[in-house]
Image (cartoon, rainbow, N blue to C red; front, side):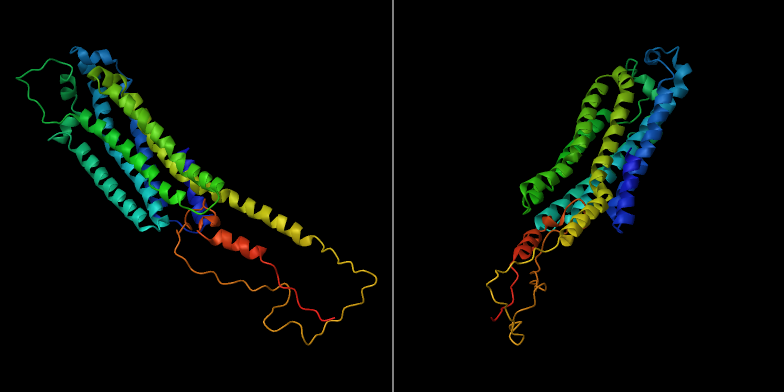
Length: 361
């Protein structure tokens, strides 16, 4: 589904709007990483389902499942890389979009600061995943994995690796916190818009679609807590952890791309408006009935139109004063009323009375 949503997003941005930005390209890269997660998860499910978890505690059965365990460990190692990259690109795509609509200096600085934190965290998480062990190949060694189910043997060479559970728990909490911060960043700007309350709430609702990713991230944190309790639980809940990681990244892509699909319905709305305007303009004007005793009025062509006035039907619109306002252009879901004074100015100018010509009788 995320692939279809991103495809429709590119269609709307390129063919209907005529502009594709860095935010769209970053989301495409996140989609590619998510497809990599899907392939890795499928391979991990195939390899881990080829043996029983009870065989891990039986030394006589371990040679039979060593190949399957090797495939499982390699898929886990690759998954940690692609998962962190996918989430990083999703968040950067959202922040690059925020940068295009940020007119407030404080909001813009907060966006840049969040960008820097996301970039540094993503790079650090990828490096930490690669260098889990001093010798990277020890991270997918079946012998080292089997040793975690045995009693400690001081005569056995111990690989120099850090405990990945603590890192993954920290990463899950950091991802959840960053999702909440990114969701709350534009709310002050949205609440300060001078638009009707109904439109303001609708716009906040569009941005609140990101709650879907936060819910998925919260469930993944809970599954990770179960997975990290013991080595046996890690084998039992491994597939569930991968599944909810996949749900988290895909829900982030979908929630960040759905608001851009409003252009698919714009043409229909414009067509309906045009039909209404044609009906209004086609309505014949009601003739003015003059009383029988009223003599015909003669217009002095020399005095009409009076100097300084314009003929009927040609009112002169005042030039609007240029004001600095949010650049909502790239965000297709925001109507023109989001500009601080545009909507009210147009309505007031439309309601201004037209000066009638003076008539001399």
